[in-house]
Length: 425
Image (cartoon, rainbow, N blue to C red):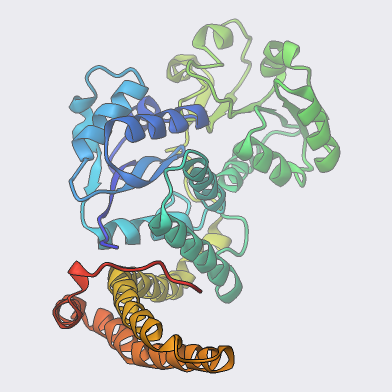
């Protein structure tokens, strides 16, 4: 199997929030893009990943499909001039860099908050969507399972995932700072997706004031409130709840802002109102910050607040990179061996054809007991004859010399022109 793995990446490193939210994909949109890639390209082993910090497409193809993928992304998002945003994309056309990038993303090394635990689950979901849409082949299956195993090693062998240095935890750290001088701060959390739920669990220890949560599905809000010891507010009363709160954290998934400037302008702000937007696309209208007394923080402005945990994680980065390097080396060995797998099968079939031809010639003169013994001996001989070429091929893979040995075996056994019988195992 020839490795032609590539990636198209748009992330916070090159693209500001207003660009990222423009191309951000929901679960339905991710699956829609998978369908477009299946219908209009020859790409295989496709993975579509979209989070608040990145939208990325990984794929296998001999051709560089970067421009096609960006166009199809534009079609999926109804962006007519998507080519105008090409400069924000990072094109990884070499297999080594695409594989390394996916490892770093999945481990949380490439996250805004280093070691963010949410990314691992987001990658798993993206992989599940690829598998569900029949866009994951043997290469991607093996790669993803190698990544999951590597993640497990990182958790078990390093301090990289210790503590709670996630985006949601950083938001809670920010809330603590903003409300330090407020006697009885009132916090409202709107939207209980993955990040909103994490925020609530971290706010369970918020003892200086009150925390209310609300969600379109109030059943989920009530379950989480019971788990975390928080209070709920009916979603139908969210407007008045926003008016009463000192801090409003919103993480609602929607195409248009949920909290608008007009909504906040209607409210009486005596001192300050802090708005925290953890959504991409944004769920709080950016212009709300123009209102006197309103301070708005979006995902790009929430810095790494979990200092102790974060420093611990940063110290573990060299160890994490070492584990990743070992995993990539093992995966590359497997990938190279897959390249020689067809030759191994051809050689095995060629030897099996010779064995069957000789068996046919001599078995007619043997009784059943003798025929069974010859069958067993001839199979054992064939396996032993195969052993050395297979070992040599695998060793040649690691040395980068497999193609030479493949050519030699093809010439010696005329493998390209063999009529191979089906094997009887």
